[in-house]
Image (cartoon, rainbow, N blue to C red; front, side):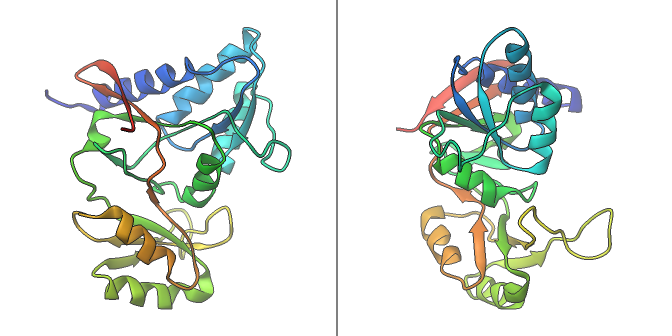
Amino acid sequence: MVRTPDSNAGEKRAAGEAAAEMVRDGMVLGLGTGSTVAWTIKRIGEMVEEGIEVLGVPTSYQAQDLAISAGIPLTTLDQDPVLDLAIDGADQIARDLTTIKGGGAAHAREKVVACSAQWFVIVADSSKYVDLISHSVPVEVLPFAARLAKSRIEDLGGTPILRQARMKDGPVITDNGNFVIDADFGTIEDPQILATQLSEIPGVVEHGIFDNVDQLIVVIDGVVRTFNRE
């Protein structure tokens, strides 16, 4: 299949809108961040306008703004600590549903929301669906600990790069006030071991390896397909 930007955009929209069909009246939802799940949020907004009643917990300021624009009433994890469903995007997802997230620097909040949900769904276009994870791993770190974290990532065999902002001088600052290090490990044969090693680094707030995805909705060759964790 010859891929074009238009086909990629079409896949994102189809996957995102398909996930919205899982939403039921009365649900409390985790609303993810990114270009694919943005279609989910827009569709849920249309459903709210049609009469369905839901509440949303956004994972970032970007998701919050989009949800407000779509007319979705919002809540917090303090008010609603258990979510019925969380829907989010991915930077890359393997066939065993191990996922890399954090391209939008929101992975710490995304993981908290995902782990608060009874069912966690990833939406993706076919370019994100791979046999083995090879995407760089975003690591949110306290600014005070950035140098130590880079050193420990190198000890683990990774190449760490402090993510730089595009519209300001200096590093990207997360919604939590921290830095992001993008750690390239090449093909990751055992993501669970690496996840544990990254979590043990002092000053690391959260890394972008997710191993709790329940379901993937992905568009392949124009067809919406669903894969559940075995």
